[in-house]
Length: 551
Ligand SMILES: [Zn+2]
Image (tube, rainbow, N blue to C red; front, side):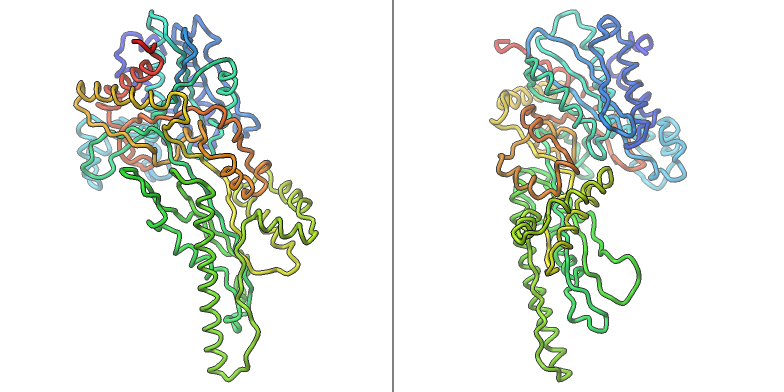
């Protein structure tokens, strides 16, 4: 492809790369991801520098991956060990949202023609007519980001002056689902770190969008929000509907926990100027398999829970107290209802109890072990049966098996964490070059703002979920242990290399492509900023990072 690009400007190169990448499908979890990786590999191999240095570009196969996916790496060696990692994900979400337009979801020109006369979305129509926007699946999230990294790789490889430090480029799959690409990349990064590379920072360029209708600010993020998936297995007591007041109904308990946690703004961390979102319920079901007139005996519930400065331990403590409060309130309510019912019918007093335990996965294991029950044998067997299946389902199966082991079948809410876990990170003194990065970023943004008229704002946390989360870990060993001990059979079900993440420790900066409607059929990238301003901003900031001190 190099021949067609040779005499083009960076902006034109970025647009051409974007169009070529959008054209090819790479939906998460499909063979298209490997196809896209091969295509990127062939592009890089056509650059003169890599024709002369073929060992400096390579594919890394993701181990045990059913789709045969791979990471593509390229490197420009510098004279100093200081290094910058540029990374972008190459997968996209599918195209069901395009409906009848699905056949042109990867054709920016056809989409632009369509939206130019589309009356259902006035803004999209105006923007299509302006010619400043490029439409198509992945145009914004984030084939244009990968395109910028490719254009910068080419640009830097064309310079005659040697680089002060190493410029490392990574194009990885599976960002939209379970981050298999970045997790595999940790091993390569560790290898390079052991060889003496000093990573100043990682630069991701995943998309940013206006925060509201009239917002024109370009947000730069110097860290990433993390997330946990706090999960609840609620085991109650079933009853025939004709005897419903004696039930400890897990759907009632779950509903009340959901009402208190889901979208609760009191649970968000108070961080000045940051876009902090409350927990969201991602799953809530009772375990009945068939219709009958018995109430449910158990229910399952989990939440997406962002963590900015707080840790998994903080989340567990908070949610546990909410859960305790909930089961106590429901106990009082059930007692009251039953006694009203009993009195109105002249029944004698009864000894029904609506007590319900609240415990963590770790505590339940300890309790069962003390009773001499074969906890490890049971967990071994269940884990073996669930390997390779959905990790959330596997976690619930493990917890359920523990509850089944309890001879008393005590009603209880068992709290645990299901995969995935994304560590939070933000610029601070935990990083070798923390303060320096901040200073260099501010200076560079000022220069670009003066040249281009763009208004920038820096924030500490990229609010969506991103691969960069896995590049460093701030939690103490003790805090991570709360997570490890409460993620059922983490070593088998979700073997996250926390030690690797901790030892790599690269700050993650997101300087993103800009547009509208990511993950929607009206997805589009804004060309003037993304193709003309952003490539230079990213490249020069990276050069600032590896610059010699006295420069
Ligand atoms: Zn993305």
